[in-house]
Amino acid sequence: MNLEKPINKVLDKKAAQAKAEHYCAYQERSQQEVRSKLYEYGLKSYEVEDVISELIQSNFLNEERFAIAYTLGKFRMKQWGRIKIKMGLKSKRVSDKLIVFALGKINAEDYFSTLCHIMSRKAEQVKESDPYKRKHKLIQYGLMRGYESDIIFDALEFSALL
Image (cartoon, rainbow, N blue to C red; front, top):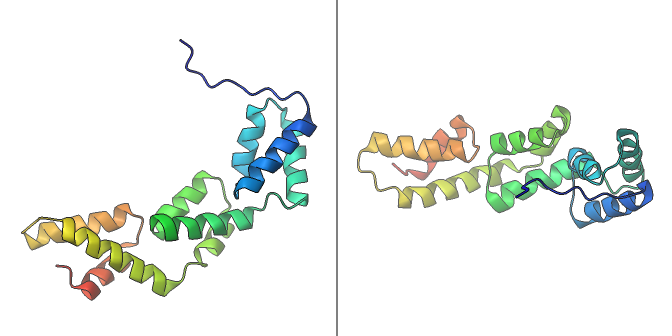
């Protein structure tokens, strides 16, 4: 039994570009995601780069727009912290400069209130009676969600969860 992913062989660059435009129109994509998809279509590297540049010129592909959409989406929907969002953007090969710019779009008050909210929800679930172990579990949860340790400590003091 062959478990490898079949390659969708697209014969010409024009058809691949049309598919890539549809792929980008559906939701914001990073250049790396589109590049990988084009290689799946069986294009050569010079063809892939041509299609990428065409997509950028026609504004189907915009790395800044992708970084902002990814950042705000992961923060609002999944309630991820800046560290986890940054790692996600790095995995999509977004430049450090754009990552800093996109993370700057997160409102500081919303960030803190979101952390307080998820920490208070977690505090209700933690059944630990030892205050040190309880605090440790809550800190670990905040770190796992991608929040910075200093903000986690502030949220624990502010919410009086211990």
